[in-house]
Image 1 (cartoon, rainbow, N blue to C red):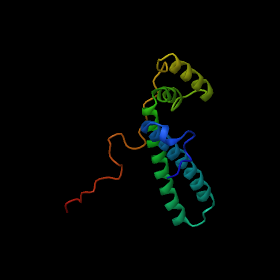
Image 2: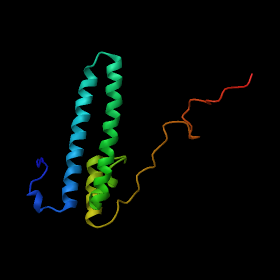
Image 3: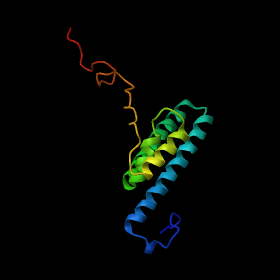
Amino acid sequence: MGTEQYHEPPAELSAETRTFARMCTNLTEEAEAIGWYEQRISLEPDPAARAIMENSLGEEFKHFCMELEYLFRATPKWGLIARGILFRDGDIVDNGEAAEEAADAGTAATTEPPEPTPTGPVDGSLGIGSLKGTAS
């Protein structure tokens, strides 16, 4: 069993701490994979191969975000700080400082992040039209 993700004797760590370490390792590996795919995609001349890599990259984004969300939920202070930084306008460093201060004080950031904006039609459709045939 590999123990590269541990800096303390694994047998002395709680199951919760070992799971947390595994998720941190997964997050790191997903970030590395994202970087590798970006490099490969930037150089790949074959459109079909590039399309497959781009599809794979989307999977890495999804996995990274799911693991990050898990870690935010497992570590409430981290989640509070993240909510004060992510998806906000303004200076990233200033947002980070304010979020850290708010988390240290045990409060949420002063303003909620904006709601995500839809990227497709507002009616919830996929924007591809009806799949039903028309009667002749």
